[in-house]
Image (cartoon, rainbow, N blue to C red):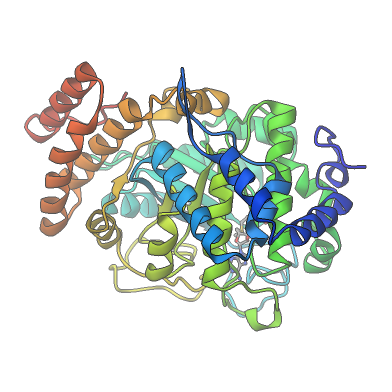
Length: 483
Ligand code: SAM
């Protein structure tokens, strides 16, 4: 039944294959020889085209996840760190979610937007309200958003989403601009995906929630999201509709994490086998406390230790796929997992509809919040913290704007041109942030970092051009340079 190329959910995410993978992983979790072979296969290797990584199959990666030999677990973390460094360097891309509407016709038992929740006021932003939200986000320094909405064909039809995207891209306030809009809306038709593609979205993100079909059906007892196959096959329709960059994810805490982990990698293998390109990103949300939801009723919660190991094993298995972590996680947890493979984080986030405009960084509107936010720091605090920890916060959106999506982005990773391209782009967009939005302390730390890091652009011509662009920003007030 298992067929990586099948277009049927039950065949490319095959329950039998997952169960046999988990049994195989259990059988080999103390198998030092096999684990060492797997680690060797995943090592970054120098080739004529730069540094390349082979990645791992869902079976191999599941063995690493199950491995309980402490010394080999240390090697897993070390390998994840080195792969992260080889392809992402110290750069961390910044984004913020923008909640458009919490109207929803589904009954997802873990989500406060569920139709029967009478505790939260329902709210949908008008285009004028979206404009206010976007101005507030631009004034924080954001350039990249992920829009979020409940599923409701009457209140949030695709036309509303498309109009909202047009509004977001059209707003140019002071030196601000939203240059990439990622979209997290419910599974939809090829035709609607085509419309989203034509509207110029970045990544289409859809969290699978759980790959376990029986569990999925119980967790989504009614509404369009009940249909497991329609949800699981959504990324194939998105790609058929022309969207190159898709983002996978599971909501950890709903079902057994080892099952989800294998399912997630099988989904990535399926996209690669059928469309020639794997997922652009993987999100790793964990279930949180929220209105009318008690996470204690879900007994599959994972602790920080397992969470870190999942992230390290994903990094090793799919080295070219970005990994996203949100403000659901605390500062301590985020700090720990950044080193193992996270490449994008949100900052200064509000998970309520209309949560940005008219509020100071300390005021938090709670009434329509989707879930409790653990990391409540402002974007400036997060940017400053990242730099103090040795990372380079990046507001770069260049790949998507230069048409380097899907396999063209992967090609850039594989030929090792990242250091000549992503590195200066990160520094130039950070310079924009420092000029226009940073606090004096953040600015001071950032300028020293840029002066140091710009010297690490290997190609001399590129380096000189980047230095020239940085000068044009500081002295000439110019913006939006990119390679
Ligand atoms: N309505 C769209 C859908 O159903 O896919 C997407 C928007 S939904 C607001 C975004 C995501 O929030 C969901 O896919 C789910 O993974 C996550 N989520 C829902 N309830 C949550 C909770 N209690 N804690 C953490 N994340 C949650």
